[in-house]
Length: 150
Figure 1 (cartoon, rainbow, N blue to C red):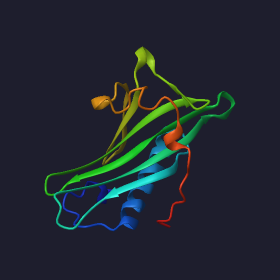
Figure 2 (cartoon, helix red, strand yellow):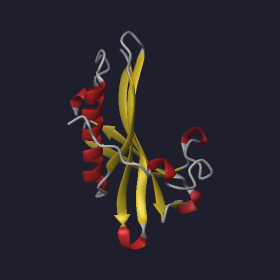
Figure 3 (cartoon, rainbow, N blue to C red):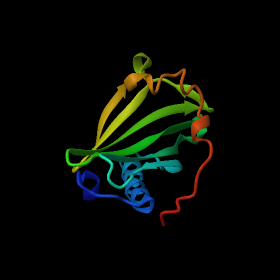
């Protein structure tokens, strides 16, 4: 996954973004023990632009018996010539309804490092992005897209 941290990658076609993001999803699955699968992709990379990035929405079963699932997003962000990073935000749902963490914390955050994933635990979402009111159900993650990156 060394190419994830390349701060001067040049333009990457969508297939390359999907390959890199897919690798991060696999490693996050191994790290958490949750078998995440992609549900949608968002890639923004244009030749000559100062920034590029890609995200994949993911979903995976935590406990089918409890109807508990983890849904979230895995992202790579590049500020060309300055920095490149990867992270994941995971939300929990039971029976399709949002479950909050201790002290009503909203999301579990992970950062990807050259040594693998680092857990930052339950946190309040940045800028209100992951507030319960924004995502009271798992509707955003309902439709799974096939991974066409191969």
